[in-house]
Length: 170
Image (tube, rainbow, N blue to C red; front, side, top):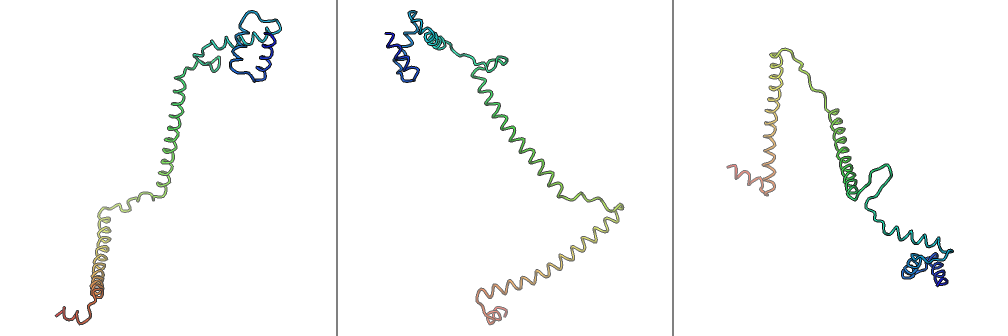
């Protein structure tokens, strides 16, 4: 039996054994009747068996830190997701603030009142409005001339001749 176990061990160390052969080795080394020359190997196999029985309920990251459960992983993930969203909002707020500052610089400062006497300001405003009114009146007369051109254009498009025009005038 020892020669078979030694052969299996040789194959085990070369990573050439099957699962059944590894099971056979584990069961052999878990017995109390192991030769002295294989006591170290038996201790290794017993260690593997003892480690299988230990359940990991909590994971300790560092001895000085508290234990982490599976729920903490979700919390950490949620924290990082929230941090990403907060960073995006912060960038948007900062960009909006900077753009508003640039727009404000492009506007001229508010006009300060130039007249201290209200009556004088009223007279100047009245002059300015009269000037605008006269200009609108002239523009209305000039716009009337354009309507003559529009009528002529319509007549030309309809294909009327000069004789047709004279007959319609009569």
